Image 1 (tube, one colour):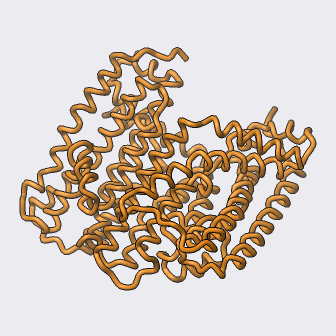
Image 2: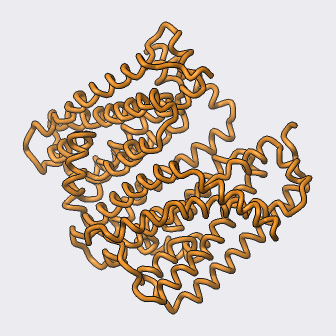
Image 3: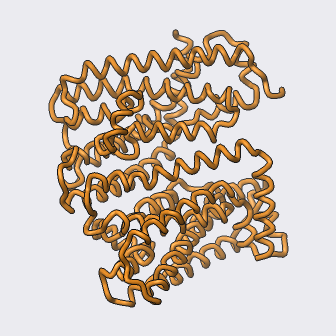
Length: 258
Length: 267
């Protein structure tokens, strides 16, 4: 962990070397993120609800998914850009160092600028929570925390899968954007609003439903089944094949020699 | 003129080689198309007050948006042009005859056109045979179809001029990201690429009327689905043409100004 903070310190220092560009990119990040939730707000301006979910309920889902995605994107850009690491031969350097490989990959690049999105995400989460009428109890607080953690973990798992794929193909595949960007885009609405086949895929193959749908139903009091509240824990099962895939890929890794 | 057409042809032909990239792009387009439509479908079936667009018209609008995504995409970066500016190779380019602005304009036009030609037909072919709730329907009339084609063609000139202008601004910013991305986000919003213009709040719709961006794709698509009546076509074409001229003049002017005091970053 100490090592990771060391990485973070170094990245912050290097980002601050270009002050003007740093500030400008923060502003542009603010705007890019704004357009994400602007869509939701603009649509709720015309419609009152989406399959029974109101604006703040959707914003809550949105914030939880975005926070999970951004944490991975900013704190672990190395995993996101894993194909660059392999193409440039940087991964070989990581392999020879006596530290945890995944930690090194994770800390390879840390995007300080993207953290402004994280702050925005947290603000939206708070706005949504303040405006929602949730009858809080210990279990519900726990559910909310589990949702946020599982959101971080599911994207970690997906990034890990995508990275393992890079071991085979060397080049990152555009298709993986479907599962990262596309998945993020879809999961910012409660999965229940989609078609049955989509719900099936995103419950049993990539389990977004356990991050943002079943626990949400419990949290909002739409369901009293407290098992729903614990359902984010199922993400841990999803992580197993992700780790296995990464380890398998690493074992069969042959450097591309650059 | 033939010189510039050659630049266009080179980019066009080399763009056609990237078929697997197009295939990957297509899968993304289908996925996003379906997700967007499902979201709107869920909204529409939840019942609401008066809506600015019929559901079937909106579905067609969304599919057209996916089909012509490569054309209307504001984040297009012509790598060789940007690198040329960044690493100073533009100095060599200046030794060659011909107008720099026009060369770049045709290069960008060529690569945009090739990528859209590889992508639009498959999206449309699949979208017209989908189940009724997801289907791209035929245009409301022959006039609106002709109007759609004409405005889309002029719109593609307009987006090329805007993209070229953004590339030229790299002369001034050196960094191709930061500031220019900021501009792109705003443009995207007013182009209807985030939410169709009729779904925007009223004051934003008013602002967008005074900006060129909605004429790239939003207006042509709305002509297709009949959201804009076909007697507005001539009017639209005229406005598109005027915007195209204005942006091109700004682009040519800024190129001249930049070249007068060109600082070649190293050799």
